[in-house]
Image (cartoon, rainbow, N blue to C red; front, side, top):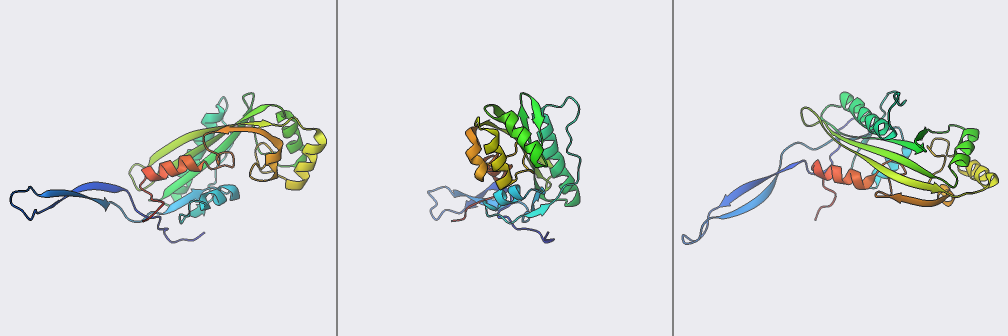
Length: 236
């Protein structure tokens, strides 16, 4: 991971009045507005070990670094799926901010649920096949939680959101599910299918407000948060 600060673009802005003297005594001085940057260039860090989230963030063409948070991602007793995802997204961001004070840190976590029960990463072929067999013909809810933690402020300011995606898996025979798993081997994916790859052929329907949420990083929500934090995406 590079150690230098990453310049993202413009820092947060204040709108200030800049009075200009009029050339005519009969006309009042004109007031013009100029956007004034209020802080130094930003250091943007993705708090994740996920290659999928890294690839998604690269779409925004912003300089960023990656730091892996070290924490227990187990759900707490009695914790709802949404609460688990939001807590872990914030915990990942905070863990990285503790190591890199003053940074703008992105944390994200995803929890898949079927009939209210959490579905984790299968880890191997047998568990992945069982997941797909259980999910087929039914609707699974994916909670993709996002946290943007602004360490430039004291105390740090967090923006958080839980983006939900409803996924219906086709009612396919065991042989087809088994063949898919052997081809793509999505054993590190909750739900046992890569929707950005061949796994899309297993799906009957996806309903969401943010199409990148299912892959692990909701970019529509993230770009909105980054804009509020003063990040610009286009210059002209």
